[in-house]
Length: 110
Image 1 (cartoon, rainbow, N blue to C red):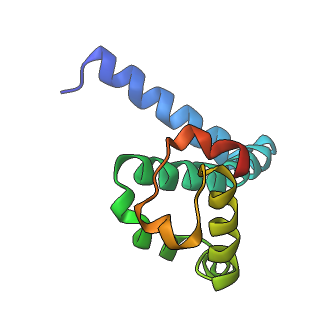
Image 2: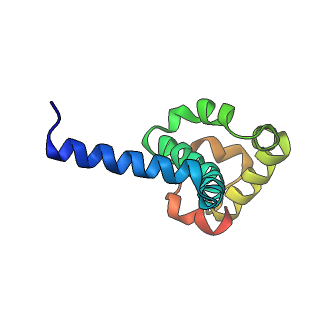
C-alpha cells in the first residue's frame, strides 16, 4: 500500500526525472551542477580542516598536485617564515620555535 504523501513524492520524483531526461534545460542544469561541484568539494575540505587541523595530510592528497607541490616546497616555507617574522615583535629566526602570536595578527600577511 502507498499513502497519499508517498504518492505525491513519487509523482514529484518521476516528474523531475522525466524533465531531466526529455528537455533541453537538462543541459543547463547539468552544466550548473558541474560548475558548482569543485566549489562544494573545496568547501568540504576547508570544513574538514577547520574541524580537525590534523587532517592536513588527507586534505593535501585531495587538492590538485600542482597546489600540493607548491604548499610543500621549501620556497613556500621560506616565504611563510619571512611573513611570520614581519609580525612577530622582535622575532628572529632563532626564536621562531618558541614564538607565538594571535592568529588574527597573521591575516594581513597571509
